[in-house]
Amino acid sequence: MAGGRVRPVVRDALGVLVALAALGGSWWALERAREKTDPRRAVVRMIRREAGPRDLVVVTDEAPELVAMASPVPALWGVPQMDDLHGVRRVYGVAPTASALAPLLGRFGTGSTVDREGRALRWEIAAQHLGRVVFDASHELGARVTAERVGGADNGPCPLEGAVLGCHGPEWNRVRAEPHRFDGAELRCIYAHPQTDGTLTFRFTGLPPARALVGAVGIDDAGWFPAGAVVTASITLRLEGHGEIVREVRAVNRKGVTGYRFELPHSPGEATMTVTTPDAGARQFCFTFVLAE
Image 1: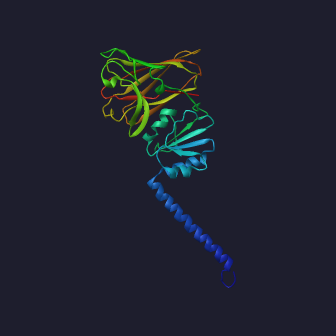
Image 2: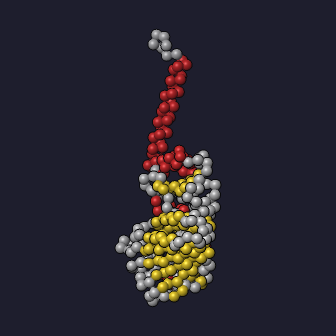
Image 3: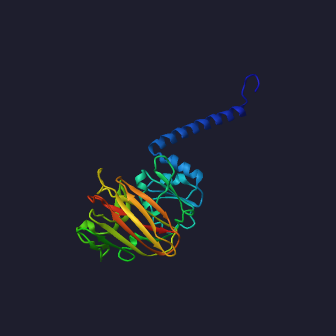
């Protein structure tokens, strides 16, 4: 500079820098405004920083903008059938509400929280042996999954009637696999209304070797009310070469579903599940039961 004058080249460079700074500030202000509309934008950016090409981001609702933001990490919107994910390291679920993650909990069981609001979860597919489904109880009613009611006025077996297990008693006693809603989110599960004066007992036979039993349980929206009782599902697995494995899953009185996961020793066998509650009033209990490896 001479005589306090700015050389043209320097002046032009400063102008470009000022313009870029203003543009960056405008972009940042716009992005902050967008985050207020959909806070998941910040969540997707966080996922993109830690995820890689062997990971998958699943946005449960129709939000193509979030899918685009995840790039170069593979991403999709909606919840497709995911029976075989061998080769995938992690799956990230991103939803508008925590409850909307229900379909992913039903397939993968309990996940790790990614954000404080619970709208994003992570499953370690390869490390937790969740890559391939080898048994899904919802597809086996009347075949490898049977049921009976033990005790009380509705005591007796539940024979296969078309696509349902027709337990004795009123229509709501019938066991069936179908979509139900949990705090607004739809999940295909096995509807299994309990009884107060006895148990609903399931038998799962011909179970293949697996590394994990995963799924979710809940009371659907039509059966939820503030004073409702807890429903308990007690699971006993008898696997070849191992002692009994006894676990318990509880559908607490809240909206949405609760995921679960049990480690298994990769042996074939069978299992039973007994469903009980101290008060059956409107306990429209539903569960998924998935073996994965």
